[in-house]
Length: 606
Image (cartoon, rainbow, N blue to C red; front, side, top):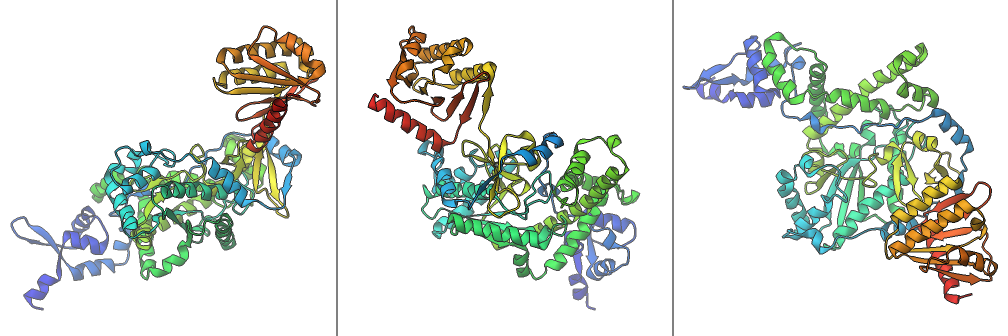
């Protein structure tokens, strides 16, 4: 071999580390241990390595393979959503499963839900874009606004990554394309009886699509092509590790696409199977195996295993950069996200909410088995995440897509999947519709324990499609006192208080006094106070409010079966008797009907 060939066969320490996929400190310590030799060149005595020595080292049995470590990957970018149960009574869950009134519908009206959702959108105004000099900056302001952003701007490090985001947005604008966003998400419904008994998408996922479409509509106000969201469905990547089935992932994937079609969002969403997309990456098998080796050694470090006393400096470097208890956190999350459908609900509840000394031998055995499952799941999950990052999977497939995430981190914009105050992801719970029409995500065990919701089934399905909030109930004089205090404190000048009187309320002295006090407070606030009653009750009610000129009373020949209070955003039905009860109704369609009915009678004057 000529001297020229020898020089070409030499590489620098940085090039050697790329070949070996290790940190320079690691290579120096292997040299100290005699695993490899370097040649020194120049005044600075720079290290050079023969390529043949590097390849020989790689092929040594029990050598490099056991020493490979992550050299350029920040494990803080790997996350799994935590499970934060509120303590609930399992006896109440079992009772309510039997006792709750079950509502059955023939089908879910996607268009009605979408239209009602869109009616509540509050669009940005020009003042929201103060200091935005370009269209791209306005669009970035939309997606990073508190309305949609999860996590702080500091966590995202917007100051550092804003130019990257703006470049991608501007590319779409220049090419008259919808603004591209991408998000790995929506694998399968988690089969954990405490979280969800249903094994398919439900109202929670529908609300997610509507929420993301809201962002699209906001952007369309600024830029006609709007936005397009590429969701990388990762169920096929993870189902084995989470002990789910391929059918679970396929069913969920197909249902997501059906929901998109039913909602008319075909141009807004593209759901791509991440597993199928990997076929475009010819060398991914090698990338995956390398990621596995690296993660295996990272686990040894994170669990406290020392590699060798001679490489303390390497260990110190790695602990400083990688060891933050990440593995423990991922394992804790995996315990609740693996398939636990085979564990009885009551046993699963006891394992989660009891101290170990309160568990018998069988219960402890199940708990340990779940822990073992979660260890394997956490490791495999982290390997896949690491391999995808090494392969630059997402940026390769959507090079001009702004990366969104459910776990806010640097360079990735965190987004609320359903609504701002809902931390749960749609595939980790059940959809719950509030009486106001808003949707949130809750763990099914907590929903059933509360007794505040009843299940709504689609005809022919085994599990609820969503849960619906039962209207708020106030009982007895004390309950009425709290109700009236709430009305008096929340109502504002310019609001209205309309009521149908049933007369019986004025026979109860305590209730009569409460009503008189309430109407005095309404008068002080300048609230419009209108009351309709039957002819024969007019005198008694007029006498009760003779000192209150603010209240206006209309007598009519009609009879009313109960008292009704109509406010701006709710109706209260009052049922009198020995134990009076008031029901709050917040369904806006019902509220609108009551308002219309009241005004018809008031306008007719009869």
